[in-house]
Image (cartoon, rainbow, N blue to C red):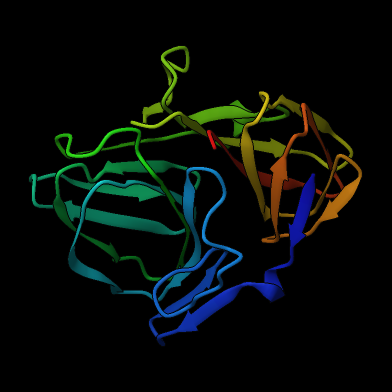
Length: 233
């Protein structure tokens, strides 16, 4: 089963400095049919104006993954962590028992990110944060784990949940496959470009909710950059 969720059908908000699209219910946008997908709870497509951002605010018991599509995001938190994550790279904040953080675009141009929240397997663990570069050339033609709760994905940022966040870049006409385990939930979004997913066309920034598809075959209709989340129910 693959359900295409067109970009135009997504909920959203325009705060001036922040233009957001929500693949699932979030903040003032509520859709009882889109409360999550497996353990995936939030996927926000955010555009953040230059020299603006999210002021300090708290979180608890959530795995929060930020995939930077354009520009860069600067992170600070109550643990003393500071970091700047650039386009194509990823940061992971495990909110655990509680953490306060800010995320600012200190660049001269708009920063665009995917913010992905996944429910952790356990509550109340110590909070943490980390970031890592993932050069797009190293995921050319294949899906590469960017953040993962699986020990075998040693090069990925760690997650405290039975899930993976993967990235891939494909040239027009190229195909990549991903084996999805039984009863696994997957959600695919092309950050750039359009694809055919098991024969179904998915346009740039559309979402594809996937269940009971043993193998995902993605064919690039143009040069594409993809983000895929694979979670437990």
